[in-house]
Figure 1 (cartoon, rainbow, N blue to C red):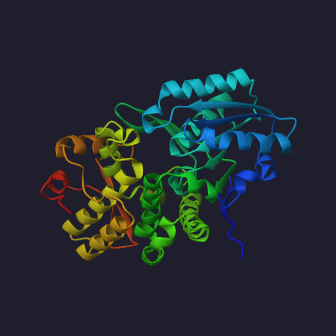
Figure 2: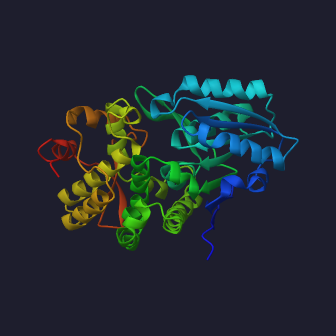
Figure 3: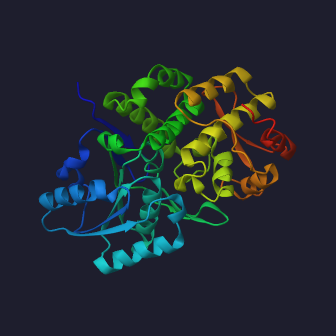
Length: 372
């Protein structure tokens, strides 16, 4: 039985997501997504030693006319800066990239975000092909065209919507992914069940062991179902004016945690993105219960699933509730009317809510409340 899947993303700029094992070894598959001759492979110093040479060799074999260059940045969310973005643009200039050039983003979410933003800005927009190598990037950041870099004031505050020309997700790349990063990606997979489909949460619970064991068929199924959920929303709402905001379930809390910790997760002394989102989803579910919107039992089941997948579900020690609330106010999902939160009416039924009282949020963020 084939475990290769394709998800079509519709809308004004349609593209395909291909999911399955062995795709990095298919140069023709990648080459057919590249229009011109200039290709800048953007990666980081964790992923490039594993895959960049292989991808370059496959592309050269399939497109001997191509002019290839490589920009390798240091790994980590704290490197997703305007300075690194400028270096990527300098690499495109050195390559002599023309309007039909392509940026190939080979790596996780940081690489995909920065490479996509560079592609969005070079000559007012060139192609980007997303080749995610982490589970989190495969199910989230590589799909939908959000690109950005961070500022000290907050995460993803400078960016652009720039849909990819294609997404190529090789599940075999997940075999070299550290266990912690695999679990972080599973947090984003859980998110889709939490906001859209309680039945998917049950499937994840039933297949948790296979997913943690990196079974290709289980991973391909989880990635495909996640991407289908996201593709449907992105096609309806490409610029996040409505339904797409639901994809931020757990993220307003999570981004506040990441920012307040100085993106320390990538240095090993704080929560990474997926871990922060896991905590954020539990906070959002518990806030929903506290406001009388949803059963507390649904929040407890969500928490149990995340814990089974090896994810944290409580705020780290030492974070001041008032500072977290201030970060949430500056989050890019806020607007003039105040903080917008994605809450739920129960598992699989997310809603965008405004006007949540600050005191209710602060109560939730108190250390005593977070001994979960």
